[in-house]
Image 1 (cartoon, one colour):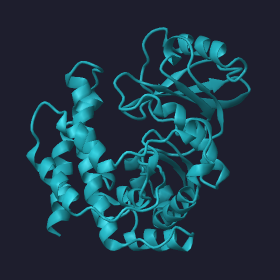
Image 2 (spheres, rainbow, N blue to C red; image 1 turned 90 degrees about the horizontal axis):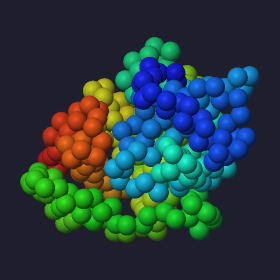
Image 3 (cartoon, rainbow, N blue to C red; image 1 turned 90 degrees about the vertical axis):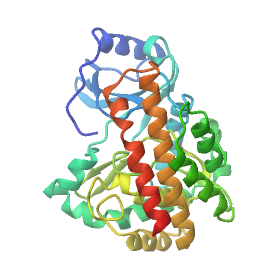
Image 4 (cartoon, rainbow, N blue to C red; image 1 turned 180 degrees about the vertical axis):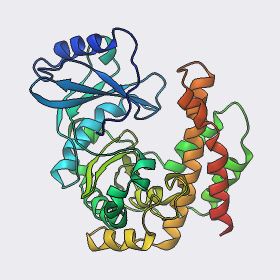
Length: 331
């Protein structure tokens, strides 16, 4: 993970983390001399753990109010399974629960070099070659990921949600205290135009810039499996192409590539054909889901579960998601 500007942790937090790791996973964090909070993610804490005489480690922790706290424990097993199938992944060294700050669940893994901030990835001249190849590379990675047999997953990885995505996210929207008529309209359109079901596969659920580490020669790690589930694999391709993840850049695929290249590479790598209507449905679904996620995240701040400027700022993106969905519906 890139050494981005660190967030100052609460006093005593680094020592508490190191002590808790020594108790929960003896020997796994040998040589750790510090813990530095990184500004990565709104629903998980990410810490860089420098070590004396050894490569650094990365620790991920649940934070209060996350949508699905047990998902972090599944992440470790899923990263291990993905790595065995050719998906770039860090090495998982320990995971589970422990004392103090580890009580809600943790994953300890190897540090992987790479950039994770989308705005930097999309602007850095040194990553121009990566950007030109990313759509095709992403298609290949997703094809390998979707080729993983769900029946072969074991342990925590086998405990994957299989809820209908439209039903699940509509239920979260319905629980919001204020009405959101545009999102309700989009949900109604999605229900009327739902595509035929497919055999469920492993879906990452949040594959995009920001959840992968990249270097000039390509993706170095796929991260953030907290929304992984069983479902339609086209969901992952569509999510990668919604406007929210382009950050103002023109490329259809995360701001740096075209959908045709993504789909062609996916099919060439064994991922199968991607129907245009199914892809569009999942793109609309992606905008709807992002809008609901933004509502939930800002609700954590407004409700006092977790005071955060980042969570508060996410609230403004509800309108962006609604706008993006309506653009797709009128295209």
